[in-house]
Length: 428
Image 1 (cartoon, rainbow, N blue to C red):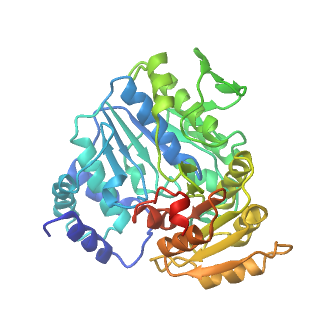
Image 2 (tube, one colour; image 1 turned 60 degrees about the vertical axis):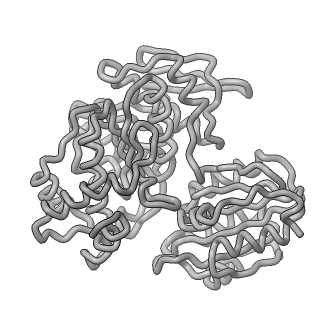
């Protein structure tokens, strides 16, 4: 196996399941690899807001002069997007020796694609002479491969219903799984305004240093600026984060609480916070591509995220027609998601996605047709996100808005072909 694509193909063949809950196999390989970090580790779990929180942590730490490593998943277009060192996406060839290390240490242990690739990226990060490691949990927390690394500061973002087949039927059981990243005596930052009781119980049971939004840190704001206050420090007069959307203050507040909790080991000054908030970037999170018609990209793929997306779209102002391109996994609460965007969508473009887990475009169309009280608007089916976007561009007027949302595959499928800078001349 010579290059990254060879190794990724190898990882896909190793295990019959995509997800195999349990840490014993990953811990075994970790121990053989001698995998450990010599810098503060911040681990981020939650249903929504994980990627944004990691991006905010990274942007602020970089502005403070720290060398950061970030692991997030899934990727939008290229696998190597999952790891950034000092703010730069790693090169594919730099990952290859670390895949070789995992394979050598595996000694026949079966690892899923996610477990194998996680160990390879953690190996690269551990060797990268970092000042701070920022790790996003893939699914849940307690049994996620990322949790084989002990954290110095855990952040739990908003917790809602998603992946219920694996994590449990309600917020309480899902919260308990996500709380599995907390550690005894270590800061546990909870940026969910109404966390499940199970999270508080578990933090207390293991003796974590619990930081609750509204008790240990809080934020306030007006139209011009916002302010943050923690246990011992205040940051007044902050500009809003460059990431758009109503929930970004929750994510930014959690990130600032983490820096406050780690201030002895990872100090950041007020200027680094201001610059980091202003410069943070994250593709596919209420990303607005300039041009006419307006183009909005969002990886909202559960009811909680779609509700936030609907609120953000509402706040954008008036557009004569909103064209909605949508593709999603079949195990999601699709009727609820369709119902939440329904009042805003004037035309639907449902798309197939290149993974067996996805709902077909035809199935999405049928589920939309079954939404009670839906508006009668045109709808079509398409074989790929790029084809669906082309159809939306062809139908749209310059003053309209095109929304591409749902799975990472949906937004990634559009980004992969290069988002056109839309303008009247594209519209034939």
